[in-house]
Image 1 (cartoon, rainbow, N blue to C red):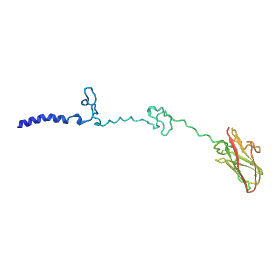
Image 2 (cartoon, rainbow, N blue to C red):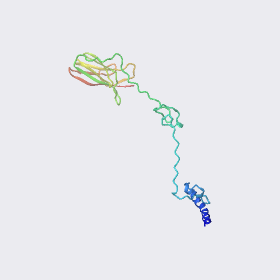
Image 3 (tube, rainbow, N blue to C red):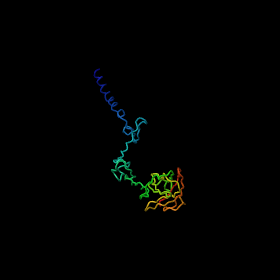
Image 4 (cartoon, rainbow, N blue to C red):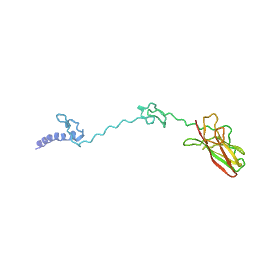
Length: 216
């Protein structure tokens, strides 16, 4: 009886070992293993028996200077951080700010009050949209008194404290410039073009005495 038990154990061991060592119990090869192929080599893996393989991760894009252009396309490596670049990674040409409009210069100053109670004010501007004011231009008023005014950052000027009377108001074009007066189109003759004839009374004021200009 003991001999029969030993013999039975020896016969059963290879069978159990064969079951535990089956490749189907260890891994899934998506039908690429030899045990899954027929004589013609056709894969016989069961649909859904194996998990689909994840696609490989794309290689990282290298951009050492962080300008948005990959290193393999960057013709200007090591661009300083924050520099605007073109498609080749090279800095874009900088556009210098436009120069400020020329001023009339010279010895023109704001005369201030002339001791009266009337006033005249207006603006010197670029006679084209959006019609910005011209800063630093000189405006003259001649009448009972001769006074000068300089335009501010918005192109505005003011003659305060004028005695009552009639004044001829003219702008002064900047020297050595191509600026030309375009407004008003008629009025008393001034060195720059037509001016304004402005009567004022004590305690009164006249506004909107404007001068338009273009360059060229």
